[in-house]
Length: 261
Image 1 (cartoon, rainbow, N blue to C red):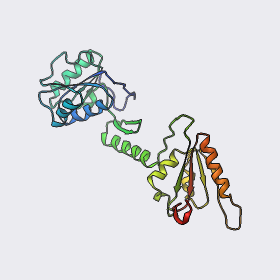
Image 2 (cartoon, rainbow, N blue to C red):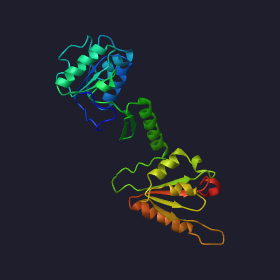
Image 3 (cartoon, one colour):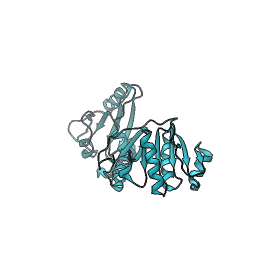
Image 4 (cartoon, one colour):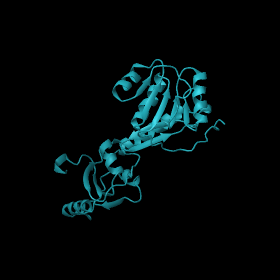
């Protein structure tokens, strides 16, 4: 039975050293093969001809290429299959064999006839993002790109678990005032911080956007008013870092101007 539109169960396949058969050798097949190699799958391509890129993967990345048309039995022992030829009849035959053998199969030409839908995938370090667009691949790509961009510039927090040791201190300048002008590295540091030591000159909206579990230490130095001595600020930075925490010292402007770094 073809799956209903939008009804999917998202899951990550661990395909390392497992056989995956890709029937077809064009541009779509190339994209699928490249992604499967990222997952360390054992990839077999079945196609009379392939693109130069697929041929290069066969020569340099261990992809097995059977230079012939698909025939019944090609999916034997496979964990996953991709039907990516330009012939709907061949793709249907591949999908039928997969269904009989209880192998999940992605049809490049007919999403409704596929037993599995391939998401738009993005990677940021060890983090993998997969987005299903409910039948709209461009929508899925747009959402994926926005998430990856946010992880890259720090506007989307990645509160990754990590070992307790290995604390750090990062000095971040808030720029000329507009929070949108902080550097990418600065946003990344704030997104991963456990403790932020800030003063009234730093962009306050950046502090408001931090997760509630982040400890914010007020280190303001007000003219003719209360202030935190620099020696006390330095001691706090060292104390939190020695406790294994990621510490950001957020200042206004460029912290290295006039010897303030």
